[in-house]
Length: 255
Image (cartoon, rainbow, N blue to C red; front, side, top):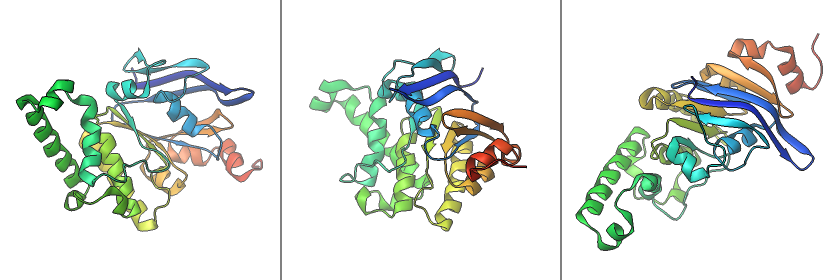
């Protein structure tokens, strides 16, 4: 059984069908890319998987259990975390505080524990701060923990957003165009980071990305969407050689 399984997913907005009969599987520890031209339905798939949109038809199952109808924070607690096309950091908080926000979904001390600063509350806060600093060390950001997030270089902001997502302790991480706006050196570092995350945290990673070099280099499986429909699924070599994929990107039939 796949860790994440999407079956016959259809999403319609009025007369526009953003996704049609979309099927997808992600296994534990797998790195799977989702590509396609602008408007193909990629982010819509992410939004349904994380509860931002509800499907018109179809099902989304995490470890065999349907998550359709669950709210985004509930799906996050079940084990799916994500980043966004545009970074959504809390710019006025420090780097450390941004990561600590990710631990909020796992706190156990409750409202009165916070108000009264009970010993349990203090122990949990210290534990989360220790874990947050360990994450920042792994991402090379520990020396900037007290800086405001808005003052970080763009590449570091991207890494911080991923670190915050990992603070929710996910089983699956969805990365929506993580290389957007990065220079070539930052993209190389990002590829190494994504491989590190998969290996170090033993989680499945589902990746949307327009940089084909990056996708082809790191993804074991790739799904290609065009106008809301799946036109190819396979390895990088198989997808690159598929006539439907070439036509979708070049805009004309091949052969």
